[in-house]
Image 1 (cartoon, one colour):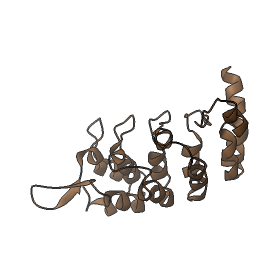
Image 2 (spheres, helix red, strand yellow; image 1 turned 90 degrees about the vertical axis):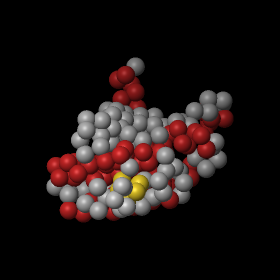
Image 3 (cartoon, helix red, strand yellow; image 1 turned 120 degrees about the vertical axis):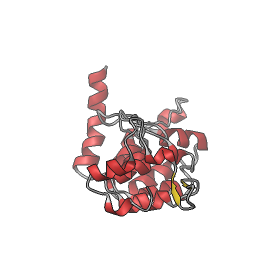
Image 4 (tube, helix red, strand yellow; image 1 turned 135 degrees about the vertical axis):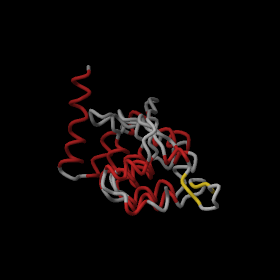
Length: 196
């Protein structure tokens, strides 16, 4: 059973990641005939050992097109289904937004956040290490993503000294490791001091 599920995901994964054929992401979804037969399961199958689905893979493209195509496919589905898919986590408990931040995909981040697919509250979602997408962006040196996410509503708070700083969820992970430590460790510290 497990072996057949791995082989069934190899073809679309190979086409997308190795060959760059992003349109092949459509193959990871149940076909329309299955939906008409009453199965109506719109959830994409897992495509990698890290339990990434098509949406996770789409943001690895460094563009918005593959993600936009997938989002358009769900235009007729209930909003709760799309929200559940976008909040689905991989083996590291990274959401689609986490993966977009890690991959420096500012276009996908702006599409997800700016178009309302991800709410300000969802920006505070943490992965298995307690890292928000903004925290991950800082750790991976995604300067544009950090600036954009920090500028979104309800991501900053006023300090006792009157200046704005990131909410605690963005500043400290579960181990007490700060976003500044993550940025320094990734040698990406210079550009973030305004937010910390």
